[in-house]
Image 1 (cartoon, rainbow, N blue to C red):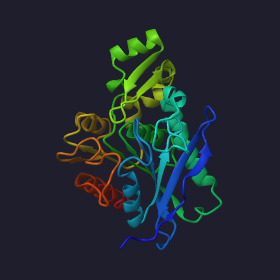
Image 2 (tube, rainbow, N blue to C red):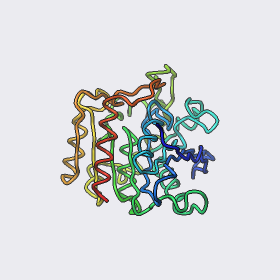
Image 3 (spheres, helix red, strand yellow):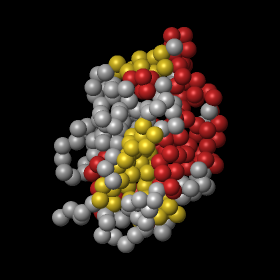
Image 4 (tube, rainbow, N blue to C red):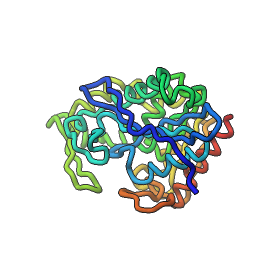
Length: 288
């Protein structure tokens, strides 16, 4: 029997950039003693808050005593009106790491300023960032620069900016001003503008993992699948080498999405995702 959740349905706040908006949903069990530890979850590249099994993951954490916030980054190409489709190609093309970091800050600021329904629900002394893939990188970067974040978990995170920004991609975007990619699932042709790469150069001190990860002062756990062909397992060990006191966990035979897919059509989480969320909860509970 499912527990009754209260979902703060698609809260919308303004982004700091280009008149775009950040939308997010909040899940928690109102029957549990409050305040509750809070998690802000950040999706990956070409992801969104309603992708695949993310809603079920949110329910799992709510059942296990957390406030779980799944957010849409303001320039991921979705809109509050179209939360599961990349329709805003202008925003998508100029997406930047610095925009994502500002979006996460805006959500944390909202929690600190909130005077309404969530004011007595969230325990901001137990604020965790969780990120998947590129979102894991953003979670790392924001944790390193925001002391309000008290713990960090990454799921199949990037560990190097140049994994995508190869010499070939950089040369093409510098000469043509744009680089086109094909979305693996929808087959859309999606543009990345030179502004995306320029932001990396301008903010390298904020996003270079070799500099950023050693600055992490909070408990960290990095989780990866052994069969991840998108971001190979070496990424996990690279992050751990930068922060040797971090905890790591390898999920054997798990792919980049831990068995989930979109649209997800089952009521139970995939086996590898079950291990993913179980290990995450175990890590967070040991911090209490």
